[in-house]
Length: 425
Image (cartoon, rainbow, N blue to C red; front, side, top):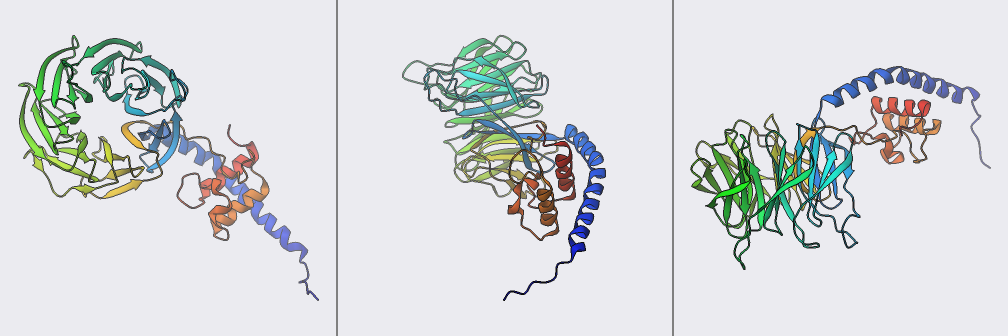
């Protein structure tokens, strides 16, 4: 015979009263919290990560180091489907608030409004015959008026007017057959007058006069140049030599290499700190970043270990360094003073990086445990129990809006608001 504990009729009522009190308090706080969060968002900067495997840009909030949103490029615009999207270059222009993405499999450059998270146009470029079309790198002029795209497959550089989104010129870098140029890198000087291109096939850096977009000189560098960055004053340019394990230092005025600095294995991406004191180099095959002291023109300290297959690198205005690790699907964050490394995981083939304003977070209905588009009373109870530790987060992962593996008061507030007002659309 089963013995039953006598039912206490007041117990459920007491729990309900306590819960309603909690919901009322949370509801009162919601407006204030939501308003302050919106104001903070408008002032925040994001890291834009170009993910090759899902043909998208992921936006990482620098304040939290969390991915908050994404935008995908089209997947059905190749001439002979099925398409195999392979975005390779990403630039953002503060001048017009547009982001630009070059795709390797089609003769197209995409123009995006990153804050609205939409593709707003495209530009047809001459990057080669599909399916062999391949653009490898892009660089904006300092005023944002002109974008240069290095076309690996067609031995050329596309010059694009960002005001009209029109191709204005294709600069031919072709060499007498069977030689190839195969440009893998491009950079624009801080004054906007000079464009340097890294020809990986013949180990040279063509110099382009940006006034008339003509090649005026060619500088021999190391084996297979793969990345280029100017010093803030424009006096020096630094070129990674992918097969040479080195960085060439170019005197921009005299157009000569003044020094070759050994670094790691297969150096690829390169960036200069805002104060010009340090140059950061990704070493693709040994998973490290070399730091060059520009005063001594020598590597400073031991290489910094990051993820597998580091490709692109960029430096924020505060000196923080960001590295895309293609093979480990992550981004490394390097503190320039301590050289400590943090990691952002769960990306999808991160290839290129840039910085820009944060868009609004992707819409997530906090508290909608069963994804039916509404938050019900039982789901609110679940959220409270997760917050108190009496249930695990797996009971309703949608409560963890900021991916910190817990349910905070602000997330309970959002769930209550979603229950009262409906899920955001």
